[in-house]
Length: 443
Image 1 (spheres, rainbow, N blue to C red):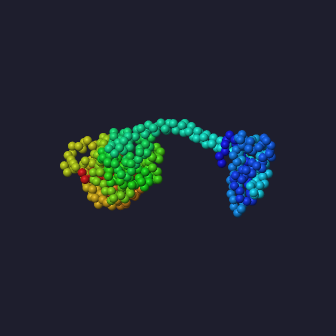
Image 2: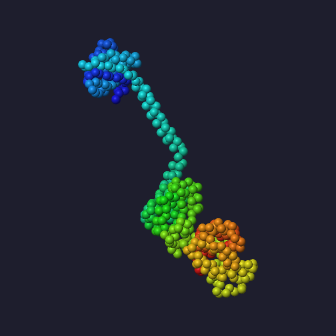
Image 3: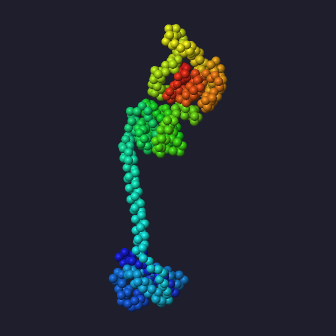
């Protein structure tokens, strides 16, 4: 029921029962007719309606089995006393049309109270919205400005217009992520060399970029991340793999989680080996050397200047057949290094043959200084075994990737030779351990 706010302060609600079939005009006529002259000239309903002090009478009535029942609503702008008198007058009506009837005043409702309740509820909503806006404006001002700058820094790189950080072209190493949101999150924490593939359909731009730079695939820790990795393995040259924590996406990670995930990245060969994907994604012979050509050789040259005793024996196998003249002996005062130089060719031949035997077995052999096999174990058990090895371990030959962790353990256990299929990302080569890969042994 729509009430006129200018004529309504109170609302009279009455219940109607008639012993017969009656309609709305009958009820309205009975109200006006039977109250006329009853309340005096001041409360005459026709005059009150003309002057707007009483609103339109609404009747809702239904007839069933020869009887009629319904509700009568009368809006009033009179004061409380006059409205109560008007409601009581309705109960004097005993006939409606030809039928006997009864009207009982049920209640008088103060419409202004309802309006006040609506005002309070709406005011609460408006105040809550206002406070939320103020809170957001105060707390997120810095983040809003920072994000705006970061979004401006996102560039469209290459012919495929891939979202990327501003340093993607000048950096020697790039991070491949899934989407634009991942690039923005990395930018938020100062990582500006990321590029997005935009799904499992790897753009040509990313494929070409992987042939020129050191590439780390940084993907989500869910099923979608695994699918993107498999697609990258098929069409691009990936050097390292980094995964977000399980069930998390790169765009959700905090700075600490991002740094930890990137620090724990692993070489592609090691990732494939750990996940039994070597047969599904066989790597080319040159693929393992791409990163070495760009990065490891530089590190090796630096190590050569700082630690000549480690890298010096490596070229000896090529010079051994020429019978090294005795003149260089005075340049190496310690007797032990000279003895080792004489022994390197024999041991290298022995280790090369053993490594060929172990190829494809994922096993490791622990050997003493006489070249005898002390223990044969699986590569996955190698790190734990070397932490408490058998006495007299002189060399370790295994079908796997030489990692920094294995090298550090070998140095702690005074193991002289660490021989593996390939070298991983070795940032530090301690003195006393000679690291040999399959490529070194075949030189």
